[in-house]
Length: 223
Image (cartoon, rainbow, N blue to C red; front, side, top):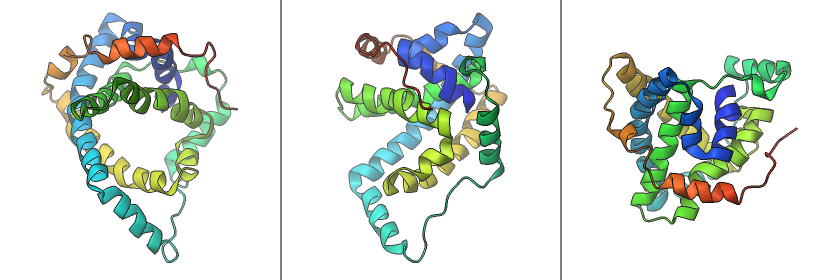
């Protein structure tokens, strides 16, 4: 998590997705490519499912129904499990934001899922500006810096009702697809390279390059 909200997000913010790949040594680039190729298909599958839920109206209906149940079944916080307590300890002991190592496997998974969302929105006819903002910029320049400072649980528990419900609904689906499908594919050497083969020449890199030219000269930072 420190790698995602720290070096991965900072590099993407200033140099785009290819900046993360370029930052890695040759051996680590191979790890990135395999992780990317394994994560991309499951990211595309779940992003398509989420998109259909929103487009069909199912997502907003589920939010309305949940709101009607909340007087009886209020949402609890999600910061009680061991991983959230560990996160608090890590942030409290963090000495320097640049101390976190750029992990190639983590970077490959994160970028693979991010690019899956990019491609899904391209398929659905969304404009480049919207895709760059919704799929990349909002994550690395808004949500992730906040999580880096306060933690995932704090951000989720202080979001809108829709976002809080969505996190609870979709996070377990992402967890299942990654841990039960993507990671075993890597371990079993069953990864198809095609998703990564399309990565370096993807049109979104030129879009993000233009966006970076308009980026403020300072990083977003949350105390």
